[in-house]
Image (cartoon, rainbow, N blue to C red):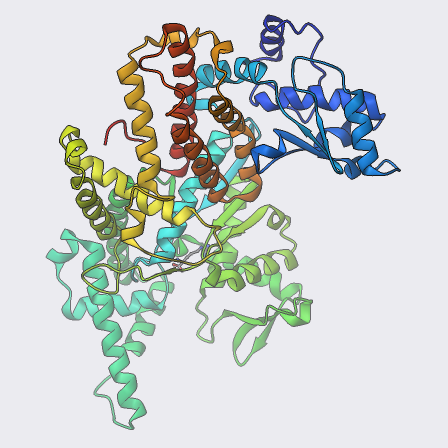
Length: 612
Ligand code: ARG
């Protein structure tokens, strides 16, 4: 079903010979519901005389199935008169047809229910033939999205914020790719700054070549902790009025970082080793989550020339001003009442996080000419990104209108057995082990799993990801291993179980795929089956909506609704043991459900399992 002609041919098979009205907003080849939308809009246009471009978008999707497959609020058509009376009148004028059941007037709303037979015969073949592409649209064709996410710091510990950025960023990358965007995944490493001076100074004192090669992230982290403790102890001493022996850690670190900023080869060589080794280790961990970055950029990669150029523009346009030797931006003076002040150059001439972000953004636009650039960064940095966008705007960098900050709330209580600090690797291990324990409790099933370690690891990752993506991004949530690894409730393991169960039905029924694809779909008649079908038909709309919300929960919520309907249908909609033609039709429905579930899980970054 690649072209409008294909759709028309399917309608002819259903005995519908009138050509489908063409609506620009409709995407009938990728979204079966748009076929119904086009038909209903056209009839409503004829009945009411309201123009097509007002009628079409007034047909909205519903949250609850009882409200119809589509619903129209009469006032949206902007016609004078009592909405309730208009609804009743229009409904009575709606012609008999094969697309929908007679529409229902409900107060000032009109509810439209699709004809289940038509819906089955338009939707199921579409799902089965599009397979891994069902749900996708072409909205990103010819467009480029730069998605910056994870952006870990090399000299500092990984924290929950990085985990969330990684999960949400990978999800957005998958979603945009699914809809034909050309996506560039970028990791903007925190690989520059005074903390590197601290690290280098400590490495020279207590570092180990061997440990660095073995596990750079772990070793750098140890050095980071030691150096910070020393610096803190020194500060305490100074506060207490005691004298320090020699130069303080912080002074040494500052001096070292200055050498880096001045491009001194020896200082840079050590820093570069830290960076290269860390990237190699990071790549391995990301691979566990099926993530591969296209570019490892970072704060260090922003060129001095770009920042000098930016600085010049800010000076010329009087955006920045001098303040005690440093350069600052006073946002209040420029009409940004809530953004306060920010330093963009220190007294010693060195740059800051914000300065580097300004340069980075300019270079990215120069290099990639993106249509959208998404920063997936914790809401703790809302102010930082607002300041960044405001400066770019004041500088006249028009591409700022294409920049988006996708933010998210905090995770409480994410720590591992070994302590407060978390490494992504060990979180994945720990949840995988917990998952394994949960699986062992069902001996019967556990015996049938061929590779329990691997399956536990996969489901464990699903547990973490679904817990992260269940609520709205901005909500905080507690990291709760017990809850996330449960098979009950809205969890990752529950979704995996739903997928594995569908695979098991397919195996047991053992009907060859060609026979499933040619099933007589008029045999799908049970209310539970129809409810499931209607839900599956919504998936392309859910994707369209998710592109607007950029919220993983839009998909996750849909999946929980769908899988609940699915699980309550098994009782009634039996495949094994049913008469052959019926079994084939039902299998087509369940294979469609599996396809939707699998496509959605993959978008979320999960690997659907076939047995568990
Ligand atoms: N590395 C930063 C941190 O861990 C996040 C970077 C966010 N991205 C950006 N372009 N500022 O806090």
